[in-house]
Image 1 (cartoon, one colour):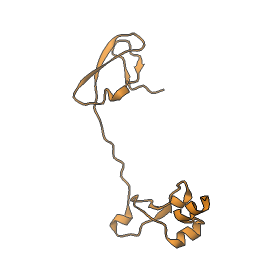
Image 2 (cartoon, one colour):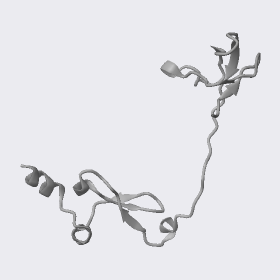
Image 3 (tube, rainbow, N blue to C red):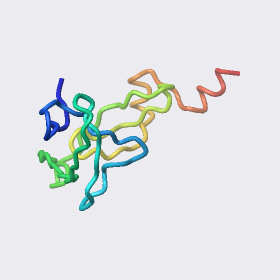
Length: 111
């Protein structure tokens, strides 16, 4: 099991405690007690962003590639582009093809 850090005194793996949001602030020295040796150690937090890039041809003139979202109830489903993530409502033709009514149909059938 992965632990966040190792205790600088005994080397035991530690999970940094973020109860009540503590330990997230950068440029601040935080402290925590080691659960193995019971010594208090200090640590600093550095937040790193990681970005993953991918092609989105629809943002460069190609048509969107829409897929139905899976919502509950299914009548709340929308169409989402698999490349850029934009969403739109379902057309009547798409609702018919998927066998999905409108949200109004759903509410009328519940009564």
